[in-house]
Image (cartoon, rainbow, N blue to C red):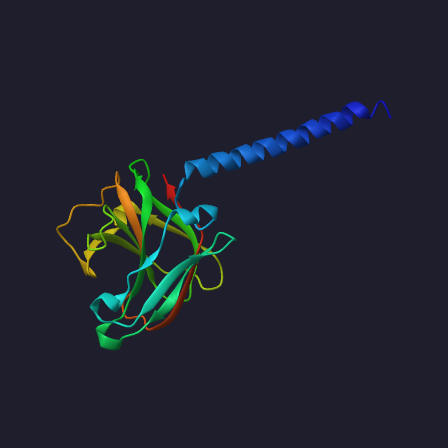
Length: 198
């Protein structure tokens, strides 16, 4: 028994070291991709407001809710009544984010076959220019979505601006989600945390 003890102790040390290295690597990976928008316990730091086509007399609706499991659900119904045809939500970040050291946003998403857009603003004013990037996640499995900042397109009231400057990455003030393009009917988009990537 005494001859086996050193070997047992050695194996315990190796096992413990392995756990420490795995956890440490995981932490480093998470820290390398800081959270821009959380749907977990930190989700209470932002308030999502509906900004659908009601502003122009439309009847579409949409909202974003976060679950205890850390999943954000953007859902509602797009209707064409009264010239409508889109739904969106917007949240102001707790404080402006400097993302100049990063190249884009990454998230896991599961959709319903519709195309969605993430919007970024350099202002909390909902009437300001919004830079958008479209994505269409898988309907069955979680899709890893990567959206480079260089591909975000400046828009205003749904129209692309060709002469506008690029997104100012040093001052991200608010975020938005859109389902537009007259994609009529109910919609449902599930998401996990949006992270900044290098």
